[in-house]
Image (cartoon, rainbow, N blue to C red; front, side, top):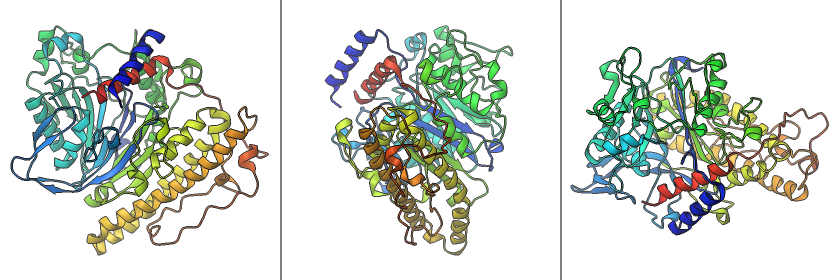
Length: 568
């Protein structure tokens, strides 16, 4: 996007609305393997920035590099490449925005062929006094632009990924404060980069969960075994020198409280939201008011076992039915309209290493989307609809693009959540639950193939991934066509849109081990014009109307973050 245009929009927003809040808005979720419903670890994140922002899901193949070859990104960061880099999946920005087809900027999430998953990043802010002592390394330090690509191409384990990033920050510095999470079949690591050269990482405990907005949250790390901590040499001393060092009652250094900027409502209410869904028994101990905030600890115990569907609900949450509901308060929701893609990364200990990793990928907003499952570490290609490059902006819609179909349905659904969006959400939630249930049978088929001919696993995973994506995209195109017609015909609706896919019982996924080789049935034709005329008799869908997600200060914040993101 043209930098002058971004600056002009930002300038106008500042004068029109008077203030600017948090400049970015991703939300990360962690579920330890001991508290998940199937024994897997779960790492998830929504990538939030702006509407009309195309995302692409691709595979970067393994490469050999000549001596002296360098990795260079558009920000100015550069470092030597190893002699060999691994194959990995990535969810990247649309490269046509920068006019560089070879670029893969903001490779936000993926698995590599070694079974290492990365989600990068949640952007954070540091204290002004820390900035004076150890400022961020602009232009040449590593940033979100390249973290995913660097780690996925080189890491052999989750710990190794943290070691690689720590060495990069030690050597080149960091251009941003960021939080990342990496996992493999055996462990999950969490890292906060808190200034230009300071960082701390821990191996996550398996009996806890976390919901992480755009703020530093790491507490004391002295109680962790030394082997479970990786930190910069001057982490505590830098805070002491800055006059910001804080300690708990046992005189243990507190990382986040020593480095972070002040709390903001856009962050504290997301912490509250995550705890309200996953641990309602402790919600009375959580105060989301940024001026008096309590209960902002990184780790907590859930009230019950947590599954993929629970994480789906967290990442689409708008605080419905609570005093902080976005529709009545304007508080920044977790499930914001500015979500561009969302991913859930599972690591299953009860599966062979080659089959341990599952990545559930959704495009656009978490409220009106569905997460498609992939054996991501095995993939050699993705569905062509994920690879449609269009550039960004409202005029860039392309009917062949996975992202654009889901974004357009989101855009229409959010115009009137009760009348346009409620049954879109209901359909995809039902579909999601069935996909999760069907995954068990698909796993059994993949296990049988693993035991008979492991050499076919990548080809099967790739073919199966394309098949399930194609079916999902076909259903979304049907919804988009029908919803567009309904909105045009009903600008002030009195009855709710119902997709024809819900008529006579919702059309379910046909996800199975043989899905890629069996002809798939066409969705049933609607028996009537229900999708044009409204809710059929007896419909009991709960359709509480919701309002704007982000608010004017959030809009200005997103513009400011975009300025930072594209101004390299």
